[in-house]
Image 1 (cartoon, one colour):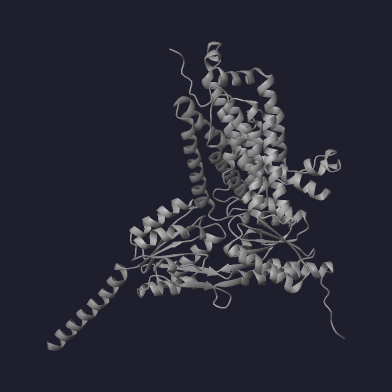
Image 2 (image 1 turned 180 degrees about the vertical axis):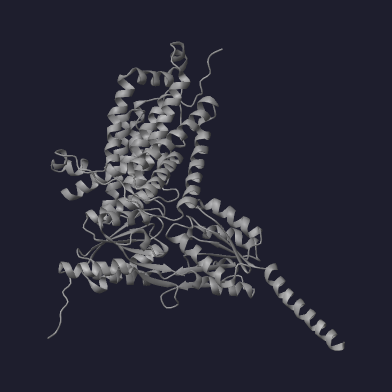
Length: 323
Length: 305
């Protein structure tokens, strides 16, 4: 009889322990709000962050990690209102995904000391303003650009290259500098033409810039931000090669996209979430590079192999065998 | 140098195409007295419906038809709001814009999900003409929707200036009371012009999504519809001047791209401002002409008591 009682007591204790674990987890999932200038399916900037949040959710489990998002926040004042709303709803982390949102964060973050904010691409966490709850993230896009550039130089026949960038700042500038350096490492006499569109979203102008680059002799194009889908369409239509950034863009033009620099934001998000769970709300800059896996080069075998075979057939590449 | 000039003008013709459709449609609507600021929203809906139809069926003409039908439906909606319900035109137009922006984004997210490309209207060389040196390359090796946009200019000029219908449209916009007393059905004319404007806005969108860009993305037009409305004022409600304005804006835009491609050392921030600076300068220079908008623009018609 005593034995049975003991077993019941132990079983009860175990079940209470298990239940409390369950409660602990379901009562307090980590909650993230994500504000983006474009959309989760933009094949670029916003999509890469969305994919990272899905990865984290898979790793932590849906019961432990929740996230919500606001799309098309290209008007900064709208974004600021959304950031403030999310903060007042008690989210653990509010990600303002765009360098245009920094000034708004300096207004909002001090009002919500228990919420963490993150933004990028930047290396500024506003510690000079005494703010302690802002994180920053920054991909060293020049590293990815360099790899793309080196590949581009190997494949270009005309040795003329076209870059279609949004605004000359942040990742776009870093990527472009890296792309140029990568080409020059192989072909120092290369001609690299750079156009800035003045917008992250003007697909029509990006498309026209791509047409112009090809008219000027370029057979390789690259560029960053969501407006580049217009340029990729032109590359596809006119048979130019494309080098992508942000996400793997090969699905847009499988014959033309040689490689893409995939920005793996999860590399920044994982340690950021760990810090917040330990009670550290900000102040750290997370860098993404080839060494830490924050940048990955995804080569599209279909286009790359196809182009290499074409080069051998056309005699552009001569494969020599020593006798 | 010759190659660059050809390149610039070819670009300008392409860039002007969506503006021409949208601006000519808006011109006709405004001449009948209806201001429609919702052009951009209708363009987005036209762009999406054409894109989606081509994605699913592969048939470009069916895509164009979809844009026409959706444009007409939106035109009908705008006419109902402004002509029948007599809403404040400036405000209701913004409402239509936001509705079109939101609906096209929603439909894109749920029905397509991710950015994809389609094969749009290919360039179509016009026999004989396309062999004319320089001119042939610039004008006669474009896609069919480009030709359509330029053909629209003389057609709309003819209708507006040489036909009884055109006279009625202008009378309804200038002196609705007089037109009414002469038995012109003002409501019918305004419905007609606004629906026609909706159709042209729809085609303007299609010219982007299935002819020039061959992709769709949320907010693909990026505010082009508002520039189209500005071009109507620039062109002083005359199709030929609207064409001039559209070409001027597009040519300067094409030049600024070439300036950058050629690595001419001017900051890109400045070159990007050029199309807007030139437009403002020309507008200011022309201010002397004292051209007034249609007298009844923005005024719902009330039959006199």
